[in-house]
Length: 633
Image 1 (cartoon, rainbow, N blue to C red):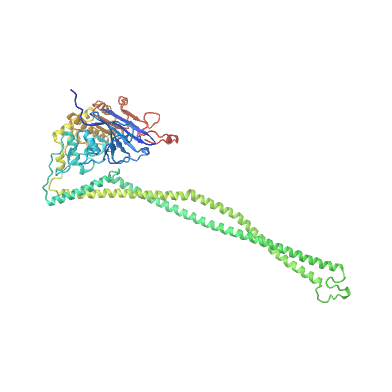
Image 2 (cartoon, rainbow, N blue to C red):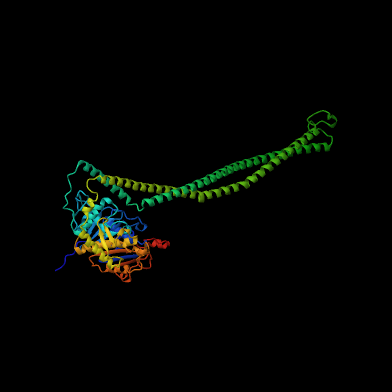
């Protein structure tokens, strides 16, 4: 007689695909799967992508390596043997479901079913309903509040109990809670459902309500909705209010420094620009004066030629008169009178001596003007030479200033202005984030005040949602056996506290341990839930994903909590290796596992070395290699 397969499913592969990109695929098999090796190689991104492909609403991190990829495929196998492939855009949105395992994106003519990304009580055409069906959890209900009102179970209530990220595994709160107090009742009811196999569909909501209670409940419901919206916005923030305040202080300091630098650089720019304007004005004036000097020299050269021509003419008159006097008496060349008829005592046009004297005086006058002209020409020539010498120096100085402005001052000023603008934008974002936290705190205060006025006890809802003590006792025993197998210190004393909804180990609340021990005990809690459900034959997905459960080996919080000198790591992997194949465990770690675990076919080392092991989730970009700048995957 064959034993029926338990409900649930396992992961088979995760693949990223793009039109011009090589596939980036991670394979998974039954039982233990280990992804280990260097940081920043895509291991934690695989965990985020698995959660994303199982209905997670948060967008994937926009890492450089995912550029060019447009879709993701997730192969799953029901424990009954049926296989499916889920496809989703890398940017989110709905899903497409294919029968069978498709290691590459199916063609458009391959039959598929569209599934919505959000769970719906009225329509089963959504991913949550499909996955719940594989786990035998369809149409289950979980308590929502103290009035016994219920919600249809969504796969997202379960996903956070089986996929534990590196951030969640060290949180100082119960593994059952996600920081959203509004969802605490539903989270506890989901935990109880997995432990017992019984949901809250038998609950009958309380209908008899006083008007005051109805009004109070209406306000509480409104506040709850506002709180949900506010927390959805805050989920994208990774910083705490204290960290944001520190960021704001640093940004303000940087802004003040940048403002001082911008002011100084702008002053320097204005001084250089003013000097450049003065030099341009001087150069323009020099050029205009040089043109004026050149024009005057041309005119004075023409005048000099006129002076020379006049002197030559007058010299001819002087020479002619002298020649007449040398030749002696004769007929007058002007009137033809014989010598005896000359009347030299009378003024006439033939007074040669007078003409010669007048010519000599005119020559003397022109010579004076020529000398004055020569001095003026000399001065103008000297001025022109000085201008010719000064203008190239001005041009050279202008070029130096232009280069300084274009290559140093202007780029520096632009960079400072851009940096200042970026810091201003960051300050606005941080202030907005702080405002979101302030608004959230205000809403929580209002809700708390309103909740205190309720007629019923505030803890009623959580108390009613709790599993029975007998069940949580058995669950704690399961976790205890795991910790004992791991040789965890003081593992013989483990219990479950219904007040904190968490483990108590050796009288100490789990959340009170350092983050290294919180990580390993969170892993024990998650694995304990899987083992318990499989042992008691209650519903469970059948797989868990743990990111950095052995954090204590990498970052001990103190010597009293440092497990690096123990054999816990060896026994941790040995225990997981011994789990039945129907229970799939995917472990992501930076530290190397023992040698026998490394030898497993489902153990993959991420090296960030293109010549050894697997480089990372995404193949090494050869173009980046050629440019000697390999990216991180």
